[in-house]
Each structure stands twice: as C-alpha cells, then as structure tokens.
Length: 125
Image 1 (spheres, rainbow, N blue to C red):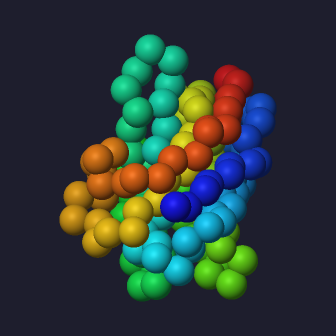
Image 2 (tube, rainbow, N blue to C red):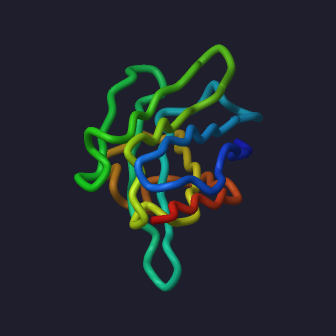
C-alpha cells in the first residue's frame, strides 16, 4: 500500500502562483508513476499531469501545458506541482495519485490505484 498526502493549496489571485506537494509513504519503492487530477464543482475529475517515478518523463493536459510543472524528489518521496499564471478556471480540488503499474493511459483515472484526500485551490479574478 501507498499513502498520499497533499499540501499547498489555498487562495490566490489570477496570474499568481502556487506549489502543491504530495508526500508518499508506505511501499514507495514500488511506484511507477505519480500524477495530479483536479475536480471543479459540478464537473468530472480531470487529468492535469503525470511523471514517471524513475524516468522523470512527464505528460500534461493541454489546458495547463506551459503554465504548470510537475516534478519529484525521489529521495524525499515527494511530488510537486508548480502552478504559474493561474486562472479562475484552475479553481478545483487537486488530487495526488500514484500507481505501481506501467502507465499506459496516463489521462485515465483507472490507471491509478492510490489517491490522496485532495487540496483546494481557489483562483480569484
């Protein structure tokens, strides 16, 4: 089992920045990939970004490409999401996720078996 705990959410004005963190514990040696999804009120949970735990390979949603950067610190078992140039439409609960299997469909929720509790990000206009 792997446990995930997010932090770093909050309220920010449009154009501002936030950095989310996701600390992993438990069987972290088994991790293959970690990522972020987000869910706005009344909407489905959407893919944001994913990173290969060993390879460092990244994939981003078109909506955040060029504004968000996903990274990880293997020694600290922590993943980050640096969010710049935030927009009101980025407002959502952001969920950290992870998998111990090869990520063949990174944009699909079904590719991941571990989830954090979520952290709220609110961007005011």
